[in-house]
Image (tube, rainbow, N blue to C red; front, top):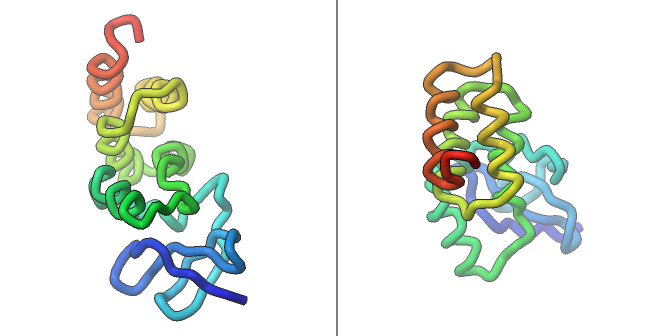
Length: 133
């Protein structure tokens, strides 16, 4: 099993792939567990870093096997206010898309989150997508 660490999540944890494709997290030296690419909760700590910094690091390596653009959706699905708040920062910096617009609407309408997050989602949605967006 060939482990390829790609992106540091924190000083002791890395996101990477084994055998050229299976997404995992682990130490720099070896994988620990598989990550479900559809719901990459193990990667949510990357939201603590600026979106542009994470993307710059991946772009510099010409790397696209770590699904960082899916992290805001995973944060919303988690229904955790900490991750939702961090996802807002990323959504504000990410290129506009139909999927990101939907995430902002979902956060605006979420009964599980805080008023600050709902209002933040509304502000970002209006700024990126306009009044009717």
